[in-house]
Length: 150
Length: 456
Image 1 (tube, rainbow over the protein chains, first blue to last red):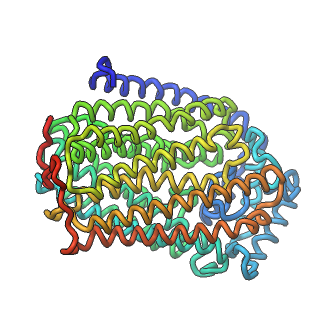
Image 2: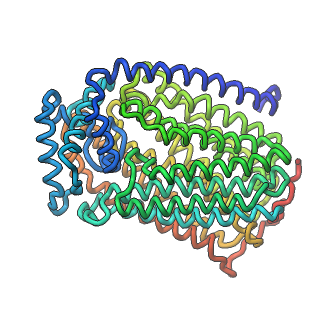
């Protein structure tokens, strides 16, 4: 490496530059936080049912088979747009009914098919989960996924 | 080994190796579930085993880093560790927390943010352990010689511990949750962990090649500078499709692509130092792991990362088997291999022996690396087909998965090779065989003890 770059200069560039990028990152984070709250997720109120649904989602570790907005395990279908796929995005009652029927039908037990376990959920849990997935679906995700297949 | 207290590293490495075995066996099991989906579906469903697989990986890598720090810092600072009692207490907390979490998962007690599924008390225990560690190591460094290697190592470990605080922040708003979740996941593996990796690599090259410390440490600063300059804003490549502003598509594409630079530099660094080095160190296996780690990290984290980093590409490939391919090779090259490198280097010294079982150890390198490379190719091809069928043609997820079975069979075979290699590695490190000791070679032989290196 060139002679002008001494160890102490390299060190100063490291510390100075890192602080510079941290400051930019924090500024953009503040802006993004506000953008999420006021714009990209503002299409539907974050109701108690949605918050409860998120708890149900986490308590049952759905993310370790499914993806949500493309993040998670890749063992089971994307759920960020599942309500669109089911055609019940604007129909809370329909969303609950179809989700309820799905959950209660598991596991399929079919040989050679991936098995979704049976999760014991109350009606409140399932209504919450349906609302949570509708809430996730209405998020402005810059047009992703490319099609309804998710 | 020059300092008595370096001995604590031994306990950390043993615990790490036990979890390493759990991790790869868990991975092999879910690899088989992809082939035979009914396997264990009722008793241990996929999501439970996957949590064991990922959590065991993260904890053993951290234990390896802690062990590496306890090994390196006394030699660098020229001091005994401030308190060995605290070091063992920290390990005990980590082990109790890990056992508690894993047993809990078996009874379906867990959270549901990916990788952060540990119950609150375990996450709190990890925080306490991290604080104990930071105090212990910082006191040691402050009392002794301050080098760039310990400076960068400490900075990496301090920052990663601070970022852990975000594991306690879980907003009801899913998009906010995801954004702050990446503050741990991304800023660990594509930021602070790179600092730890680079400093371990620098330490190993210093010992193995005998190149002048000034040269090594200058490289180290340049590497970690590029790591943070690219990695911090590179977080943006995770912000494309989770409800964040559109400008992240450009910031993430540009800085994310540049994240290959520190990995290219680490690979160049490793080879240039070996070429320049005057030493013929007897621990050939440690050298193989050091060079291997830097090289595979460049391909796994660097090349396979850039492959699907640009937002125009990622729009189609996001959340497919391509991501799985990248994740496996990146973690293996960057963090598994660097841990196995320092363990391979330090274990003989901790046991006060000549380097032992080197042929077995090197065989395990090729079994694991070959298996991981084949797994990566397999999953990449599966991911390309998945991307085309699902994202372009619009076939439903399960229809597409049914077409990928052949790839999952090949992935299982590749995974078997990785597991075989991992178990062989653990055997070669834990069981000393009398038969197999290699001479340093005639040219510029270096002592096997960790005496101060020429040029210091």
